[in-house]
Every structure is written in structure tokens, then in C-alpha cells.
Length: 263
Ligand code: ADP
Image 1 (spheres, rainbow, N blue to C red):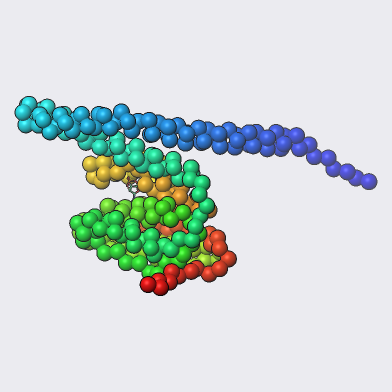
Image 2: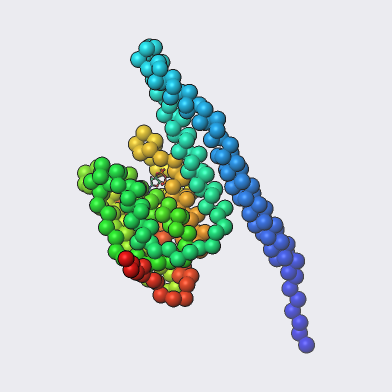
């Protein structure tokens, strides 16, 4: 009889170390989320105070001091406004996973209509055209679906090619057990080496002077997709427009429902 003995002590050690590291990582992520939530929440009140006083300063003293003073006041007002959007976006980001309500049947055509209404002014100013094919009804958080679509469409308008009016097309395609949604634009595009980085918190490819923004929008989209058991990605190249995709698993066993209006 011939036997073989393999010493797996080292393998077990590595496995244990990996497990400990994973637990540690999950804990520090949770801490970070908690920190982001508390910090952004508590920062709102002092910021409100700073904002209202610098605005008052602007109203009362703009043009009555010297030119430098006018500039300083303007920087302070702009800074406060930027911080306000950062805090709002951070709060939205840390809220994504805090929601505990069950998903509900969500007609994405209704959600999209509302998003298009919210963006009406931006669309008019930029002469953008937004078209969509019929979208399905899915089990989801309707508010978060709105945030996801709104961020993608607003970006499609923001990162437009200055030479042509923005054209945005939204589609849904049925896959095996999931839906794939796409938001396609004819904007400035993104170099392939940045296609993962843009979904990370605070990652931007432009300065705030070129394009305003906080670098949180796509991180919110990623979190929303993942909370729904899906994922998000982009296909793009500079000067050729971008298509953002997100996939959502089909959660219900019945086919997608269409809303029937009886009135
Ligand atoms: P923000 O727009 O506030 O910078 P986002 O997280 O929404 O933050 O986007 C991250 C970066 O991805 C942007 O700074 C921009 O460079 C790039 N980006 C996002 N959407 C598009 C798009 N439709 N076309 C080209 N670039 C885009």
C-alpha cells in the first residue's frame, strides 16, 4: 500500500489570513461609510451658516469695497456652493445602502419621464434630444432608478461635444435572467484606460473649471446598480461618444408588466 501525505498547514494559514483580511476590510468599509454619513450630515449646519453670511456680505458690500474684496467674496460664495453639492452628493452616496425598503414593481418608462422633466431646462439650454425605446417594469427602488438614469443622462449632456447638439438614446435589451440598459451619447468620450477609474469616488478626468462636478455621480450609479444585484460599465473612446450600460437581474418570475391606464 502506498500513501501520499500533503502538509496543508501553510494553505490553511493563508486561507485564515485571507478570511481575516476580508472581515477587516468589510469592517473598515462600514466605518468609512458611517464616517461619510455622519460627517456630511453634521457639516450641513455650519455650512448653511457660512453660506448665508457670505451671501449677505455679497449682497450688502459687493461694489462698495475694493475690487480685491469683491473677488474674495465671490470665491467664498463659490466655495460654499461647491461644498454644498459635495456634501449633498456624499450624503446620497452613503444613503444608497442604508435604505431598507423592499424593492417594488417599477415601470422604468414612468421613472424616465420624470427624469426627463427634471432635466428639461438643461435639455433646452443645450438643444439636446433624448429618445428612448420602451423600457421594462422591474423589481427595484424607483427613487434610485431615477437617480441612476438622471446621473447618466445629465453626464451625457454635460460632457457633450461643443460642435454638435447632444443626442442621447436610452434602450433596454433582454438577456438571460437579466436586463441590460444603455444610455448612449455623442459627447467627448472617454479613453479606455479610464473606463474603470471614473466609477470610483471623487475620480474626475477634468478640472472644475473645465466642467463643474464632484466626481461622485458615477460612484452613486455603481452603488445603486450593485445594491440591485447588477453592475455598470462603459464603452467609449475619445471623440466617438460613450455608451454606459447597467445590467439588472430579473427578480420576478412573470414577464415584464406594462402599465395599463384605465382612465
Ligand atoms: P462628475 O461629473 O461630477 O465629475 P461623475 O462621477 O459623474 O462625476 O463622472 C466622473 C468622470 O467621468 C467625469 O469627470 C468625466 O470625466 C467622466 N464622464 C462621465 N460621464 C461621461 C460622459 N457621458 N462622457 C464623457 N465623460 C464622462
